[in-house]
Length: 109
Length: 224
Image (cartoon, rainbow over all chains, first blue to last red; front, side, top):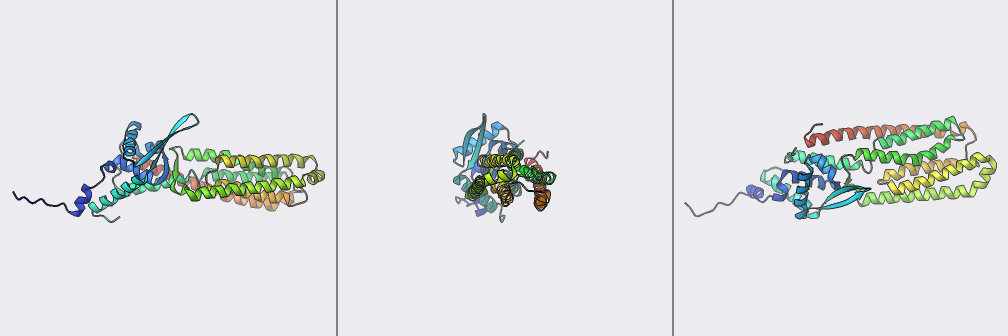
């Protein structure tokens, strides 16, 4: 057994450095939608991603905990409305994720 | 059903669809634009039917459009509201400019109306009084509705331009109401032409929305 440890190739390293919080498919879809708008209602995320309410809430909580988005709860008349907004950190994380993924897969964006 | 959004092409399509969807809460009205076109045509034809009372329908059309536009917007946002990136500073400025223009035009119209009120009533009697009361009510109502519901530039420019055009039309003569049907024919042609154009434009936007709706359903994976 040789004592030397082989270093991962740059492309592989890029994949290993992928942000796990963004890497989950549902969260990636959520961040992609939020990055394309200024503010998005919970209903649109639910309708577009096809996630259940509970599932979506759970992913939003994780992204909010990671400071990738902010959640605003308000009332439209008597109906509660929840809106989400991507933060600068969230946008940076999404851009970084896409760059690393493309680097790792050796694709040109 | 869990989406499978890791395909980069699919993610770009999702982002593009979100951006397009967001325009239907600001600049694109689809059926709202068609409704505006329809109101112009109806008002134009009413002018032909009655030179005295028809022109008043143009004033009524301005505040009548706002609830229609609002309903259309709510219809297009039934998958939830999305405020687009472009609805930032520039859109806010466009809205403010539009509202300012609408307030100025309405103010000028009302001032001119107040100044000539006596002579118009003297020359045309009771119909002019009623017509002016309707015009003032509709103008004030349009301003109030615009302040409450206008989101994009089109919400203010469409009613503002018509109000301006019509205010010039009805106040440029020595009388408030047109003397005969022949006086309003060129205006009717213009109103109906603009109405037709807007109806077509709105129809195209509505078709684009239907395609977008299908695309969103496909992206979700339901295909419904």
